[in-house]
Length: 397
Ligand code: KIV
Ligand code: ZN
Image 1 (tube, helix red, strand yellow):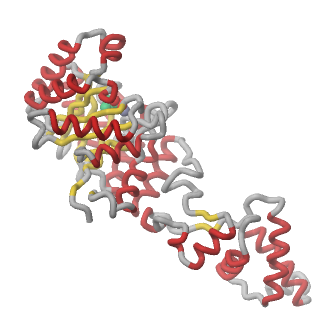
Image 2: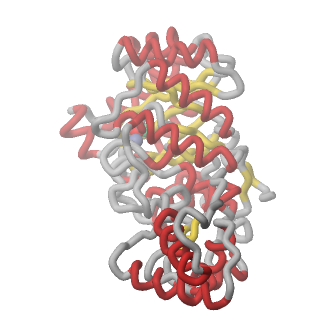
């Protein structure tokens, strides 16, 4: 086990729900939240209570009925949002408000149409207003990765003075690259004077496919919380994927000196549930949980995996909760894999029968990409009938 604990803040029910076309109802959110607790996340961001009555009810339902986790609600820096968030999450055993305001010049000028000083004032006033109403106050500087670093230091320092206990650094538009993002986290850690005893968090988007690596870079540079979603769903190209961040930490524990409270055996089940309820299919080549993540197509690879899985597998499927591993039978499969498959299917064939069946299988596979068990059965039964001179019908008698 590593030395430093990573706090896993899951935002599947909030940023994940911002995936175009996705909307979770109250029951969906409850089912996912229960599964997230089984998975072992530390914080569930259950939604944005001021966004709609439906979301308010869904967040309240989770806060009132789900234990064993901190429940967070997103809120803009306005009193009405803070009041709604309070009413939605006050029943939680441990509550956290997640306040945010944009800090980059481009957002201040074109979106909020306010100055840096006005943003500073709003941020510190809203934190002061939230103080005492929640167990924890998290403050996010939206678009932090495109914000002037010294302004970021200033706003973080003010919100901490006002009562924030977690500061979050979002790469809102997925613009940062790992070394730079790591340096930003490091800069915040070393230049915000009152940062001790405050949790530093990272929230990365995947527009350039770097959400996971940027999150890991943040952890290497002083962040102790990562904001993630199951299967990486979220606004536009999505967020950092929970399962990828966690399995990177586990698989490379020689490199990352970190630990977490995730029960990885629940990962696959969680991904399937989120996929089912969001309607977003898991792409076959998705890292960790895609259908092909543990399938070996090339004969050489199959041979290696049969002899020793570590030749081509860096993780065990059972550690993620995937009960079977897969040898994909196709034209590239070798004789070793074919023999193993026959054994698994309960066949005991002579050397000649295997040869014959293997040749037939190869011819067949030239015309069909994936060969399933039924295909193999019909090839092998045919060979057995031929070799053993049995008439159809007698074979299984
Ligand atoms: O991407 C973002 O900046 C956000 C904030 C609300 C944290 O989702
Ligand atoms: Zn986001």
